[in-house]
Length: 228
Image 1: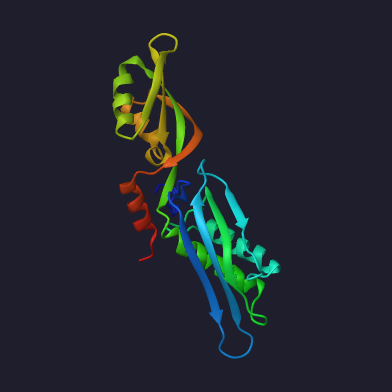
Image 2: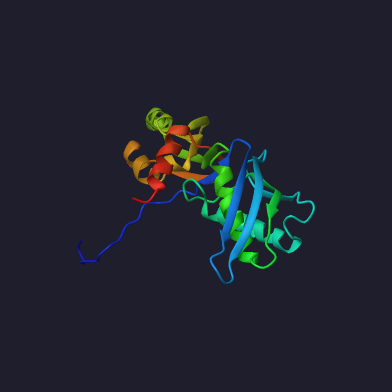
């Protein structure tokens, strides 16, 4: 305001991830034949969660050449592309195994891009039936405050879905509180800790892991991500 500088603000985007909790099959059908050179690619996939909710596996179980060998990497490429874009809320997907087990091709109209598009559509179809869920990042946070504000800090953490791991004295009259807190709850923590501790507290944070986002919050995030 003092110098007349225009400022554009954007909301912080916490790096959530999408995954699935169940197993399902999906069909990707990309058939466009309206005269001239068309597109033809059909694939059937099965999706299931990986144990560690991270990574990605693509399994080829095609037999009899129903999907020609040269187009199997195309299906995987389409699946990977859709995973990067997300399916339910626009966040990258992780922690899934995709098995390609059936499909159809056309001697003239099948192509790399036709099967990439089929792979994308198959993933969207399967994920919608496989209990899609969101994962949120959780940080390990160390908060240093005067002893007088330890109670207020711990009370504040409980309201942020934080899990206090313990506390220990540091020097004279100060306490170090360690906790695990979802990143969604501490995007403005520097400002809020200053308020709770009257400007006397400080903290450090480090990424710990991703955990399932509670269903009511996941539903809100998914709803907010949809275009108007």
